[in-house]
Length: 281
Image 1 (cartoon, rainbow, N blue to C red):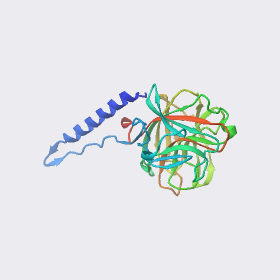
Image 2: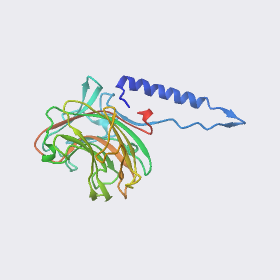
Image 3: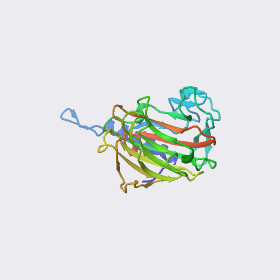
Image 4: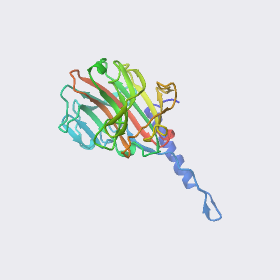
């Protein structure tokens, strides 16, 4: 398991498309019937900011904007910056009082579509990179909750069933699951994995998630910086409900969303991809 840098990933993706099209075109016919050909891996969504703006994202939510990425004009809350490794990255800044007019916590986020989640029994692959600014508060958990990446349920209430949090343990970035029996009806919030914030350095994440409202059918696998990880229970596959009973699916969001607090926080994101198979990331 390893991470391809953007240029290599683009070449690999292009090659995969050419191969897929070529194989489809060469379907063999015997006795007048075409032989079935296995469906190739598919990229579902790309949100890597390579366009130099937020146009890849259907939604941007900041203090003073709530609408499509195509209409967003960069400001301090969300902007595109150059990065020595990835070329382009998004910079999300949240200051004290940055609560949008529609309420909730302080935030600066982008959101994708429902196809970045999965319905009951579907498996999806994800890849993204996240970095914390050198001045990011190391005592975030003491100050309150905060999320950087989340798969939000298709319901207006309740916390996301799967998320990366900075509010579980001071100085750490944690993968958590909000187990709910219905939206907003909480059972438990297990921490599946945690790693130091390691401010100023990219965390390259790859995940495989089977989406299910069942604790025995839902599961998550994780790779960090190209290395497969074991979870807090010692396993390399964590079985847990990844959907909330009473909901249908989830959609992906990234940025910085938190409980109101005083320190300014800056988080960088890039490289998000969602696919049906690892080969299409």
